[in-house]
Length: 58
Image (cartoon, rainbow, N blue to C red; front, side, top):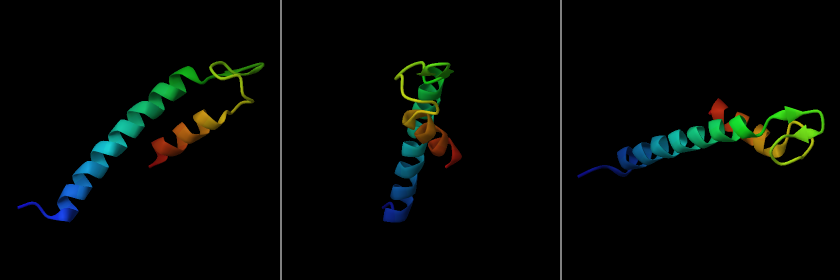
């Protein structure tokens, strides 16, 4: 029998790793350019890049 705490922690770690992987992918495509973000065109730093940075800090 697995406790709820152990099961929740395992899922949380798996989720965090997936979020980190996705954050790296976002930062590989959302890059600064003279006209804003190369991917979405928003002013740099774009919201997606900022969010990805925040995820990597977790």
